[in-house]
Image (cartoon, rainbow, N blue to C red; front, top):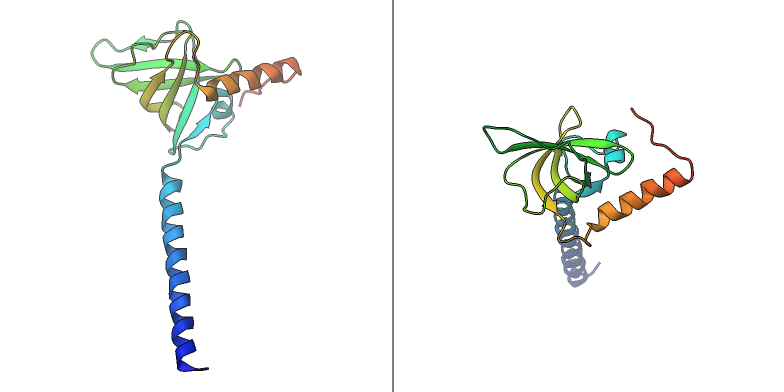
Length: 153
């Protein structure tokens, strides 16, 4: 092979390897920052990964909000109409947070399948519901119509 062609081939191979490494690093960084959405039914059935940052949402169960008297710790339950998940949050809740309203919480599941939330997002007004929550509620309602009931694990 001609020396000029060897240099070109080597240069092309180095560029291809460099692009592959850059793509692999970018995909690895994106994978760590993905927050997948799970419904309470999916969390209760064990589909949501433990110790990975996730988003969970649904309607706050009436009468489930419990506030600690000496701290900002709040524990409440969220449902999608099928199952309920306990969410623990330490901080100031949004002004629009109320029982019976739709919320999305970001956090990690602990070994007891309790979502330890870092952030709680509430709906904007009376007409708004987070898209993921609306789809999850429609899915559960659709399953109830077809006779499906989620099994408790």
